[in-house]
Length: 234
Image (spheres, rainbow, N blue to C red):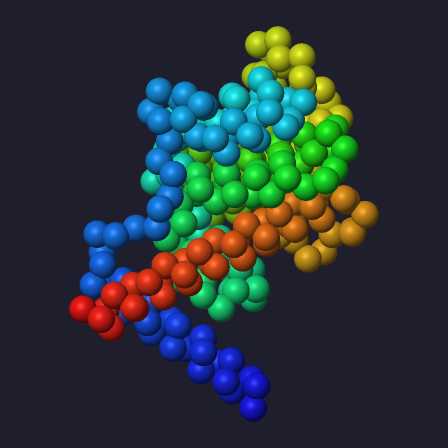
């Protein structure tokens, strides 16, 4: 009986979403649109994240690229990439309302507030910022020119290897081979089910990603409830 009731709840929520979405095409979730001048002070969450990492220079550079590549214009979910989400969340289509900048910020925030030693937290924050770079079309165009349907995690790993090589060349003393290895290897397997569980960074990244998605869905459901109440009383 519980399974049937749960299925009906999911079906009704999805139907409601489709109906409201038709009426309110001009309305969007309150995603943060970054300042075009790359002023980190414009977003207190961004500043909060930078203040809690040892890799401040690197983190600032990543935020700069995120803004230049207009992550806020990219959906945070893509049916081509995010098959795994359908196994974890019933309201997959709702997540299309969350842009990639907002989701990236949410995952990095989860890493920043976790009670970990700062050296571990700093790496977790980098992983959170980098984990979905391959979903951005501008970055994808660089590393998948032949359109071979390379997975977004592999594109993200390609970006990491090139970006950090450039950072070392430019004299960024925060970067070393061990850090590059952790970031690249963890991102490559972030959605693989055939991975040893002794990678604590991978475990943490998945935890932060899941927590961010759950909070995003909660926010979206609250937004839907407000829309529904308006429609009832208007």
